[in-house]
Length: 198
Ligand code: ZN
Image 1 (cartoon, rainbow, N blue to C red):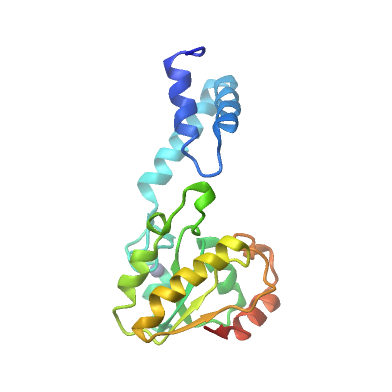
Image 2 (cartoon, rainbow, N blue to C red):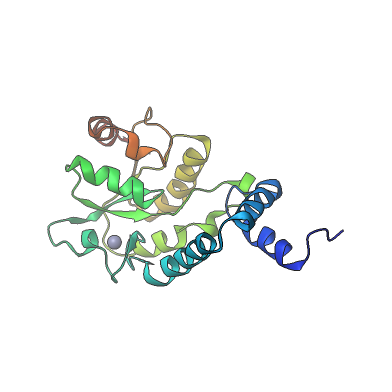
């Protein structure tokens, strides 16, 4: 039964497409938005539209940037033959803070998560495979240590190994991806240096 009317249902439906938002959460958010002062709701809507318009993905590593290539992919001093696969641009920033990694990155923008309906085609795996057609010596998989991060690492490893590229996995014990920014640099470095070859 259509209790709320078309516009409210449209808002609920749009919100329910967001990752991790079920129909109950979508309803709660929709009613929160409806009760906002008009200017707050407009600010939210225009922030979404502007972010979408101005921010884009690096055409090489898919991190968020406002130019075609991000500063790391552009840097001549980096080792472009070593690629570290991370879940999010925030994870990439965390490894950059260690100041000790001189390779480049590939940002997946998520992990495979069947429970949320996120399959390999929903994250940047095909884009990674395309990059691996170039000169690459090693792929370091730095997805999180939770079940989805591990499954994603295994999935990528199985895809890549037949190509004869060295594949390694950061040492376990590093908390789940997405929270890497909260981990100190020493722990991250230890995870990187203790990586195991698959
Ligand atoms: Zn880049």
